[in-house]
Length: 350
Image 1 (cartoon, rainbow, N blue to C red):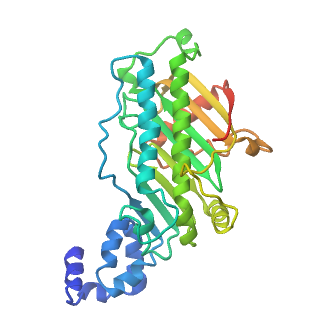
Image 2: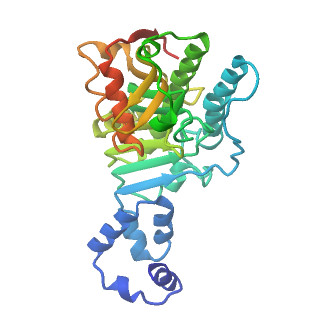
């Protein structure tokens, strides 16, 4: 009904139902639409719609990769070294190539493609809450569901990375489908060489993806001055970059200053980091009925941020709240932290 009436308005005929609604109510309706593509279509209907849509405060923008030829990421026969190389290509190289091709330029002008977030968001003047979904280039990792790989992360930024929580597992299965190991087997906390390489790939890939997404936000933050909340995720829901109002303002101040420098790698610089890692060869989750193999929890912070911080209570609770598998992920985080034993590492800036 709405779509048909919108079409008639576009053809010059009177919109009987919408004409009777006050602007304030139409604004509420458009804020419920959320999807940027649908809102852009409403914007084109008539002048009245255009003026109200431009005031929409909640917008969700989905960017499609029309050239995605990703066949999926699965272990193939061959050496473990080749598999790690495949992980690096899928998790790091391809996402950076996509961002370079579609989203690289920090300056907005008429040459931006239709797939650019700057172009898609230019009709909106009062965005307060923005969600952006990018194409996924990670194949089956983290997107296979029960029985497959698991990789989830959440990063918070201001001017640079403030914190990142990563949860991964080599296998995620329902308890009834998995034969539990004995207590003695579960207590063997030994990293093999391949286990270590895999977790290094996880950490580096999420940091590069997060810093590239944060770099993308610089021009959006500068142009949309009412923003209070931003999140950027991917279509597989593997990773999320989040910024609150105070963090957005810090980035805006930097972008508007003469201090900021252009990056040749088109991502935000990652500072010197402190990394805290929990690992269990097997983790049973009785509340949600899952079993993780090679369960790994990682908390990443800038070294400078550790001064005056006691524990990880400010980032771990609710790290994956609101996610599709939030209940299972939350139970896994609590169970990993309860084990107490952890590893500490440091990583230089890059």
